[in-house]
Structures are given as structure tokens and as C-alpha cells.
Length: 426
Ligand SMILES: *Cc1c(COP(=O)(O)O)cnc(C)c1O
Image (tube, helix red, strand yellow):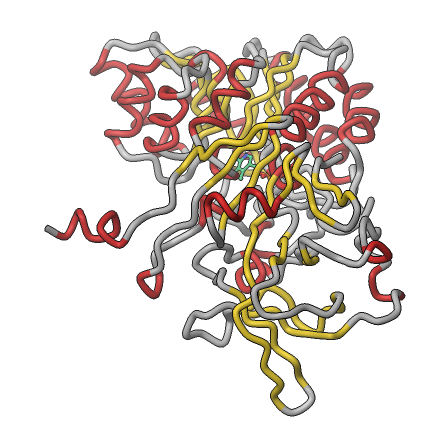
């Protein structure tokens, strides 16, 4: 679900009108719904209730401390990929035992900080990294647990840039090599207990099949390792569960669970999940204002005040974001996001930003209701990999982030000022 709906032709986030937020904070602005975040989190939690499950929200999807706090208060752990994300998780008072740390290039400083914080698992990507973790754990006298990231060679059939579980990516090790790594390292260090398997297929898989295939490939590995006397206490299935960018085109949390839970029942494994976009993508929109309309030959451009520095997913991943005015004729309100094409009276436009790059676009040849200068447009499903990928390119300050909770909203990150942008240059 999401909590962005039209009432009498006006877009609301929960019970707050988008127009009201725009008047208070200006545009462009990210707006998140607390109810949607918790709805998604609780649906995942309930779907896997039969298993001993730890949900580790993926901080890189959207790392605002206020959002992390809400999730931590509701029992979420965190999937982190850097020292900066560890810092954010700590600031949000996250339970460090529920933190898993992935990434192919962890620095010594980052590893030491995570050892001192007492995180749950280091997700190990190579022998060299494991050896370094062991050395640093001995040096600091800190004990920890590790999961080996295994590449099940399953194709989630998504964009190549976000495919990470195939053999020829830089992530993880293949199943055969996993066996030898356990034989070489597991049970040998007093400080690092290699006792779990991590898998992450990549993002945006639109079916449950790759996840089931991955589990079916990993279970024999776990059996074989256990037969050799190794302890395997947890399986971390990573993230990448689909978020609904269009309209009911991805499985729900319950549908993923229907495939995965039966495979893991009675396996005596703690299941770890690392959802990012399936929690936060639909919980956020990027609100922008129409600056100009421009006709060029047959094309009509809608030039808006948000740019690729605010939301880079369309040029980076060729990502689809539904875009609709914040105020529309009632007949255009609450259309299903894939039905819009059939509606009468729409115009086909390119929605583009002000940045000096041809790749600065949000949608091409897209049907939207007619808009005018100063109208507000909502770019939906922008909660994940939206603000976290924002930059100051073209010396544009990053937009504010606003959190809506029922009838109330608050700014959870201010709009950057010009002064903010240069403070480190002084
Ligand atoms: C990015 C990432 C995730 C989250 O992916 P989503 O598609 O946002 O669910 C989870 N685990 C790891 C290791 C990641 O790199």
C-alpha cells in the first residue's frame, strides 16, 4: 500500500495535503509517509512470523536518522554498507546485535568501528577480507560473527547494474569456493565465528522464483557444511524484493514468504532479511514544481525544478517513476498507474530537470494530464535511492525531507543552503 491518495482531486500524504507541505517547505522536496513505512515493515514481519526472523532494513535505500529511529523502535535491525551507515544506525539507537555489514571494500577503520559497536554479523565477500577481519578482531580483542556471502548464480532478471547474485559480479564467492573457505577458516579463530551464509541477488526482482532457487541452491551447501561439523546458525537472504513502481507488478511480502518459508521450516536457521526498497520506495514521493513548458518540434517538454541531482534513478537505471500532478480534475484522480495511457485528454510529454545534461530527465513520452507553469507534480515511489543518491551537482542544494504522520508533518532534514554547500571549503 501507500498513503498518497487524492481527495477531491488534491493529493494527500496520509491526512496532510501536499499543497500545504509545499507552501511550508517549498520545492523540490521529499515527502515520506510514516504509516506506509510501518505498514510495509509489519507486513514483512508478519509474513515470516513462522520462522525466527530478523529484518535488517537496508540503510542505503533511505538513511534519514528519523526514519531509522521509527524502524528501530518497531524492532528492525539494519543492513549497512559503510562506516557512515554504521554511524547513522548508532545515532538512531539501533540494536547493534541486529546489524549486518556487507560490502566488498570495507576499510580497517570501518571494520574496527563495527567491531567496537558489537554488530551482529560481518557479511564477508572474500578470503582476503576475512583474514583482515580476523587480524583486526584479534588486535582489538573484540569477538564477532561472520556470514560468508555466497553467489548462488541465479539471475533475478533485472537491470544489469543492479544484478549482484550472478557469477560474474564482484560480489561474494561461488558455492564451491564457499566450501573451501569454511574448511580453511571456520572454527579456527577465537575472535571471528564464521557461522552463517549471506546471499543477495540484487534489486528489483519481479518474481519470487529466483529467491526460491537461491534457497534451494544454498540449503545443500548448509547441509554439507553441517555434516562436516561446522555450525551454520543463520541464512541471510539479502534484499531486492520488488517495490511497486507501476501497478501490482511485483509480488507482495506475503507472496515471497509463501515461497520461502516452507523451504526453511524446521531447518534450525535464523532467517535474516535485508529489505530496502520494498519498505521505503512507495513510502516517499519527490515533489517538484513546473517551471516552464516548451515545445520543440513534435516534443513537448515539462521543465521542473527538481533535477537528476535530486533523483538520479531514471537516467542511472532507466527506472520508471509514475508522475502525476498534485491537483487534477477528479476524473484523473487515483488512476491505476498503468492505466493512465488509456485516459482521454492526456498529453505526451518529457518531464525534465534544469541541469546541464541531456540525461537530466524523469520521464520520456509520458502521458500526463495537462499542466501549467507553477503546478506541482508528484514523482511517486521515490523513497528508495532517491535522497540517498542526491548530490550538489550544478551547485544545487539538496532538497528537504519531510515526514508525514497522520494529520501532522515535520521537516526531518532541512533544505541545504548555499552556505551549507561551501562550509567545508573554508
Ligand atoms: C542494496 C542492498 C540491499 C537492499 O536492496 P533493496 O533492493 O533496496 O531491497 C540489501 N542487501 C544488500 C547487501 C544490498 O547491497
